[in-house]
Image (cartoon, rainbow, N blue to C red):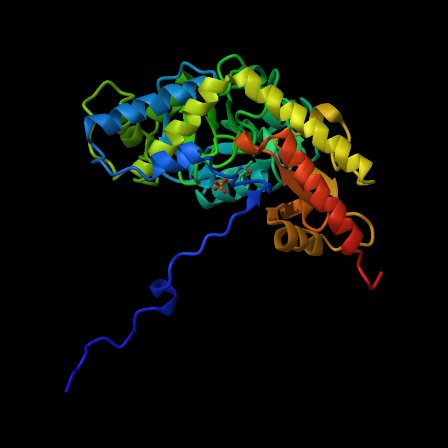
Length: 389
Ligand code: PMP
């Protein structure tokens, strides 16, 4: 009699081939991965300490320095998504007794405040507004924060936050400036060194068109000094910047094993950065500006109302439009997915139920994709009017 020790059978789903439909990803990220990046992600593995992989890491570092416009030595990619970089920045910078001033202009400020509190540090909310100018002075004087957190491209509201003068202001008050550019990098100008940003991070899956899973980050000399002055080790081994700096060859010491890097994700990130370097930052910014402008005009022509009124406050990578009267946002997004194989998204956090979000990032930012999504939306508006209203 055949006996088996197994009481859990092989799952049926795994015995079928993987199914991945074709979709145009025009939500707030991830965006589609072009064939060139897909191809490098599928290359054979090498060891995480092999010289060729260390070389790829050096090239990634140089690519991030270009994308961020920084000469910071402490520049690398975190093995994780944008949240992981946010957490890495906060847990390495903050220590006992520190306060972070967090500009809450959407969900990412909320998340940064949440992470700060979980670390046991104080988070004071900065001004709450859609698009706020330099009214941070009061917060800096009152709370004496050691870090000010702000999101450059608020993907939940579609607002682009101006950063001019903010780094200088922070430094006059002995505070470091930490900026989230996950949704904006490569789509809107940012100049880490000139704008005196102390920590800047982004993600692989938006304008860089690589799969999610790696997150560029860079630390200024001021930020590095603060980390060196820490009395206690950071509360995470995996995200300890001392270890990561060594693994990434940023400290002139021989590189030591810290963790097994997601090597194929690094191949993809390298290629995404290479494509940005080939196109050039200025051309990339202009491409995002022009396609966003075409989209905004098309949305207005459909009778839709843009959520961000002021043109210069609009994030060129993600456009938000009010859910039109008499429509259910979910029906519209589902209609586009089911009938046009296009993903767009509803709101997130404070914008839930209020907006639809349309992303045009990296290779997805094309005039023909604008036409495609406008055509699909016209179709949806004709067919989805809520019957009960
Ligand atoms: N910050 C911003 C501005 C984002 O848009 C996102 C992702 N939508 C994140 C942080 C978090 O990134 P991830 O989902 O890669 O963890």
